[in-house]
Length: 443
Ligand SMILES: Cc1cc2nc3c(=O)[nH]c(=O)nc-3n(C[C@H](O)[C@H](O)[C@H](O)COP(=O)(O)OP(=O)(O)OC[C@H]3O[C@@H](n4cnc5c(N)ncnc54)[C@H](O)[C@@H]3O)c2cc1C
Image (cartoon, rainbow, N blue to C red):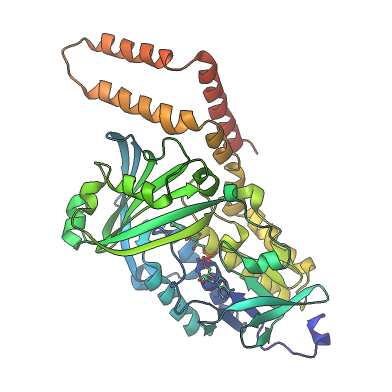
């Protein structure tokens, strides 16, 4: 190393990875596979103990890191029924995509992070990664503008490259000026409960053919008709995860707390029967980055790169975070390998990581969706209240047989629609849809 050769403390590791979530483990294993000496540090008691997420993972990303994971990893159920629901207090309109292609490479599945992360770490250790649990990195060590290692509670450890994978709060990337303080509008709070139920009950309630098949339900509308939030239900082998996610700045506009919304959601007539007689076995709350494209920080500096949630890489339109974490960790590791091979861990080489990210689906998706949340927030009443009501009313009108001629029924629906919305508001909604469409398709 040009810089490190001048240091008194010679590095023991080629790379230190801080945080053993999906982004950290993916970086560590990619490096170990290239015969680099990697130290993976995790503050939790065991991998996954400090992590929390709704439950769906995507095979395209995991395949890159663990090609045999489908046969070996502790996955819960492969999602066969993807349900989307637009809810009102006592009604809902639903669509379901149902696929049963056994060898599809792009499947999604549920997993329990406590088991799944543990399995990932075991794979990483088999490849030679040195894993240090129950170790808190307190600070990065910076010398002459270079990150040269980390300071834990008991010692200093040096390496030419540090990969910062410490999750949404990322105190470490803030410390070296890569990230700013997170603003309430750039983060959502999610609360989740897990209910234990036997496998057959889950299969019956979600209409699943086998214990390996799973379902997810993602819901728009009630209880979020006034503030921006989403709700979800995922099936595990013998439990159901149910939760809500709410933009933090929206919470200042209501007297209800996140768990009040979760209670309302759980008691909706569609949801209540799904968890009936289930035993509550877990309750957790966690932040999810929501800043998207506009809040992606500088991803590298001399001697360090930042990955996953720490780099705000979450696609909250499609509920994707783990896959962006895995791939960003992989790309940072690829960059580190190049840097180590050419003996230069300065910005000059590490900027390659930012280039890889820009060329990947991560950056392109976040860019496409960069304005959606702002538009939805600006037109909240339309998106969260008016259109969900109109959609449900239309479908109710469509399914009702009440002896009135259909022509008249549909005409009445159109008249009430036009009466309940001024032309100006309709134009504003229309232009918002056009802006969203152009944002997604025009670069
Ligand atoms: C409720 C909820 C639902 C979600 N649902 C989904 C979903 O269905 N699908 C999906 O793809 N994504 C989902 N996500 C997002 C997903 O969980 C994250 O995007 C993903 O976990 C990010 O991985 P990461 O490795 O970057 O960070 P994390 O998983 O947060 O890992 C960071 C790790 O760093 C450790 N750490 C932090 N600071 C230090 C330190 N100083 N020293 C040592 N260790 C440290 C932490 O203990 C932690 O283990 C959800 C998130 C939440 C909160």
